[in-house]
Image (cartoon, rainbow, N blue to C red; front, side, top):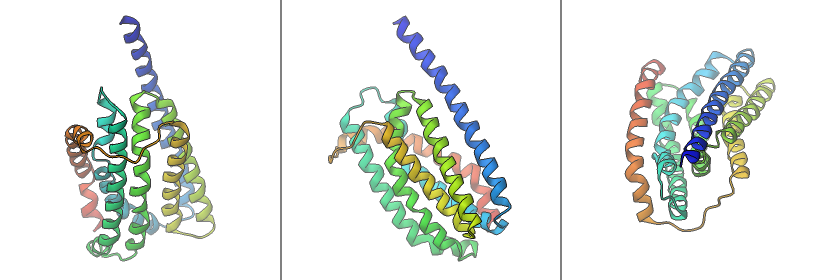
Length: 239
């Protein structure tokens, strides 16, 4: 037992270190990319994506349903939990994507900026695409494999940054930021599925879903309140 506790302690410490490396690495890459893009794009370009990102971020929190956290903490996790979580996230991704496409004109009307409409609609694809990585990402966190998560996150951001810079050089304007984000999500999905061996089956258990959601709902509530608190000013400033 003592040996197991020591092993867990070492894995936890290693996880903390890799999480810090990932966070600082991503911040550094983002800083460099932003400096380059600032010379190629206009403040309006960044502003348009910023407005869209407020709602994309909010919907992303909803899309996760707190299920990822439930997968990480649950002791008796089985295939039924994983597959049910996967298809739940996919379904939510589709629903949110459709809703964002439909409500984009109303959001644009609130901000009095119709240019936001196509940006919101394209970025809504990140809900569906991002749903594919929730379960495998949770499995890596569950096993404290934060080094692999760091590799995925940093690599995806580097690829995204390169795409955004190239597109900006080619004159794509605000769309260099939009497509850069899409590429980041796709790169992350590709890398994480190459790392994780688990694959979903075509099954769903309402019982397993309820077991996960009973924990996830509190996480979802907390995450929503935190997001709204941190970003409420932008709803006013953006308008």
